[in-house]
Length: 592
Image (tube, rainbow, N blue to C red; front, side):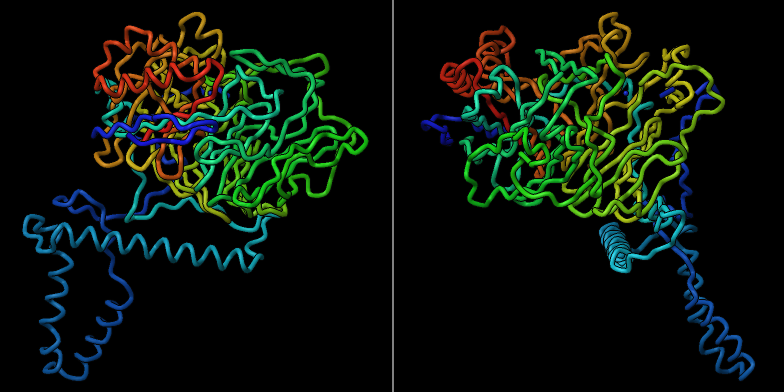
């Protein structure tokens, strides 16, 4: 058993080693997945291999043919020497489609050639993008520099995730099916008591540090859970925090890290800083590996524009402009936010940082998404294909909000009511990576936003999280997720696991009307069941789970724990850990 240093002592930790939501009245889309305005380029598919291979006759062949004709004019005798080579080349071109069972090139060789070609394509694309960015001019089109690009590589078409065809493929999934190791890290209590002890954190892992964030701010810990620094302590008014939701009023003020959407490169952290009193909005850069002083910067009413977050602003999202008055919503109005881990603001999907020089933003009107540089210049804008047509109702319901997520340092995006997941690549590329086949279950925007349209028999994708081997997908059926739907049991919520290796989707067995289900049973140590959220997947595929000591204490007393098919030694270790922690102590559970 390995030991992990607690902030105040050494304690045993558990390392199992088993193998383990805007709405189309109209026709329903056909069962085939739609690539959102994409045109697939021609490919030749070799039946024996089951993989598309781009085969074309280039200018070299044409030039060679012309040379042969010219040589005919010079003399037939010389052509006779060339003719066998021409015939042999022609036979080679025709051979794969006429005689698939006699293919001499091995599957391994073809796979290697395809991989090399894909790497070459990506390398060429990367070089072209770098040249575009270095050039800085591009194609001017009403302030947009570059024309949008959603093209599909013939050697790497998007992978289809067949939801419509997999609804009957239902089975139980256990944690050992996807992971082999669990680590528990006890998180030291921050010195600032204004971080409420009953509110959980969202966790982000840099290379060597742990970043904990919630509505109260962002805290920097080392990998053993010891407190290092308070990066920002949020200051706000007009916000009411409850166990299962946050209620904000239109006159609210906020200074600090507005949401939990942080990202990192190595040990450099990037977070959004917002001050609606001074009209500031920045991307902040904070070096976790520097010698931090561990001191909170406090708000100064005499200097309201003073940044209270640590680090340095690297991008000014307002580009030098500031508002002297707080930004308000409808006077006397209110808003609310719900989250499975209550106590922090939901992620904002309007904007997503791609890197420290570029960000993407959800657009309104004729475009769905834009890519911008750090100066706020619009590099590209992508046409909105999912449009409302002659919609005259005053109300629209929020059924599909689309999604953003990050995996392995890359940014991914799915537009609302679109079934394609794109990788967002500056300055102007949306690379199709996955396509959700919803078949007749697909909901158009016209249908989705219309409160009068019955969603029975329709599926709406919800959250996605990706690791090296799997995609974790949540979707609703026969309704959409909202408080009223849950209260009236008017929506079914399903969870599914897609294997990136086998390209198979498994719907996880469970009650779709249970809105707090134990999705993946923890058979490694009998502890908390697991389902990853979009924000809590590490760069190496680690799944982070935010717990309180009370969660562990309650778990080990349940009949589910007692009956769990986990080794008794692992269960005993978990019982000892649960006994040693306080009810409000923060615990980070890492699943690998």
